Amino acid sequence: MKDITQPKQAGTTSFPCPQCGKTTIVRTRHERQIATKYRCAQCNFEGPN
Ligand SMILES: [Zn+2]
Image 1 (cartoon, rainbow, N blue to C red):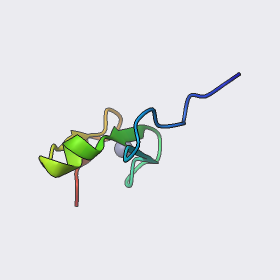
Image 2: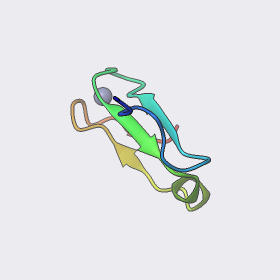
Image 3: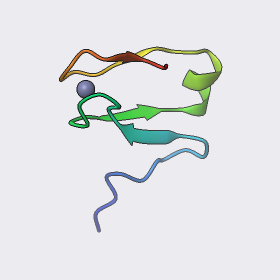
Image 4: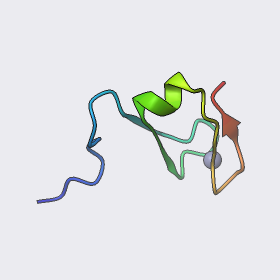
């Protein structure tokens, strides 16, 4: 059973990099609440924005 894209926690979101689409960015509800930034490993896109 493959379950690699399913978020483990309620409120967790995952989405492809808005710029290059090559990586999947995962953000938990907690990370959104504290406004943690993410950076794409492929294109160095930094968000959220
Ligand atoms: Zn990217």
